[in-house]
Length: 286
Image 1: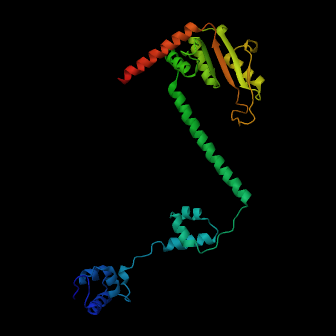
Image 2: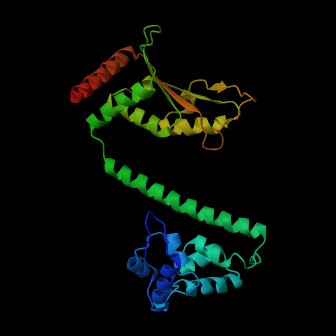
Image 3: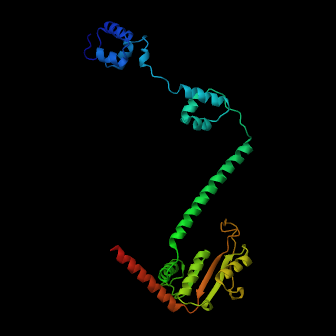
């Protein structure tokens, strides 16, 4: 054998030896090592026309799967069903059965849409149950509030949602506006804690003119526990036909406004309490 500088001078002699080794049952790797031929192209040419020995042939483990996939496809199964049944990849299923005709649909497009919508409805219902369970577990974590917890919560709640005094607009008054009945209930409980009587409250409703105003007024006065006759004049918001409102339907009840009469002193204390919370929080960051 002579092969200097990557060239095989005695190719025919080398091929004769390679063929002899092949017929003795050598694998391609064994021939490579025996003849020290590491060029794949030359190695393939040396044994060209000589079949590999049986022991080197790998068993085709997927042949049975392929035949089963083709059988199921002929029965009208979809790719997804075949994949789930055989536990193989969808790409493999496609490769194995792509020459077979597509199965005839077993239902109309309308029935397919109905099945899809039913599946989506079941999925959403399951997701809704999961969301609700998470919320209920979180609510149970809170438990009963102490007076101090409610006090601090109310200060933060007011400072986030209540009317505040500005240097350019002096408003030392306590007025809270919100559309969330939970927020209104917490605010009222906080006022009760501060011993602010219901007789000091001036309440009114702000709502779009296209809403059910009568139902909204009943809802809020029942929640607050006051007579409708004690409710201030409802402020109606004009409807702009060029905008698309999303706050519609039975759940829309407008915004409820609660103002504490003679509340300047209470407002100053609220601002002071809030400053105390800020200072206390800042101290924890140092």
